[in-house]
Length: 89
Image (tube, rainbow, N blue to C red):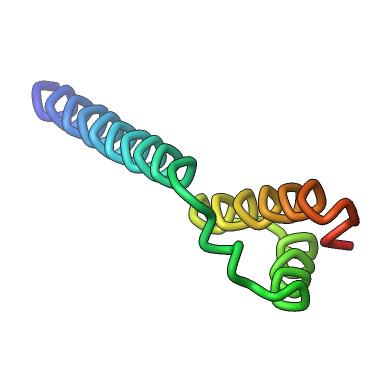
């Protein structure tokens, strides 16, 4: 019985370790993507449209992929405001 309790604690501890590590990584990534100019500002309209289409058609994005698509959507929105026309379709 002592062995199963120890394994349960080890598994529970490992879960919280990985959960905390993942949460911290995602938080830092989200904070860093919100700072500074978008790296997508330098893209041509056609390149931005291609990335937008990939995001629209993607299914089951990884956390990193979701952040990339969020940045693409943000740049589409910002570009539409700057140019007064829809940038991504």
